[in-house]
Amino acid sequence: MNKEKIGGRIFHTQGLANDQEDPTITGNQIMGVIVCKIPILSQIAKVINNLYSFYFVIFIPLAILICLELRKIIIYFFRKDDDDENNAKR
Image 1 (cartoon, one colour):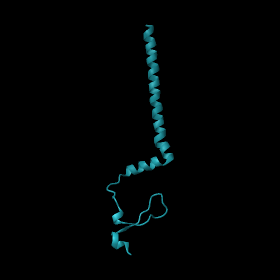
Image 2 (cartoon, rainbow, N blue to C red; image 1 turned 180 degrees about the horizontal axis):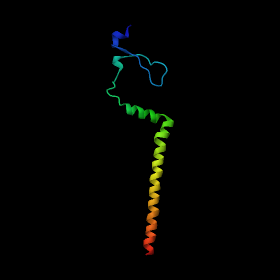
Image 3 (cartoon, rainbow, N blue to C red; image 1 turned 135 degrees about the horizontal axis):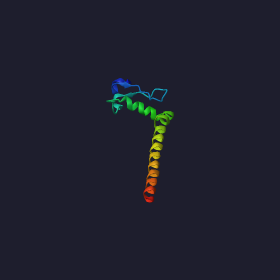
């Protein structure tokens, strides 16, 4: 039996992480199509999925940012306490 006559076109697919081709499918088994691809989102997904890139591009800068903000908060409260003590002595 020829699949070409039953379901129209035959499609051969393969996942990104697969070495082997997936089973063939016919046109009536496809549920959607890609309308638009945004390359930057693909690159971001690749970075996030790579463990080393995730640490160097996302986790470490975020940790540094949090530390700097905490430093600002701590310095603000120490200066506020010093100002309060100076005002109390006057």
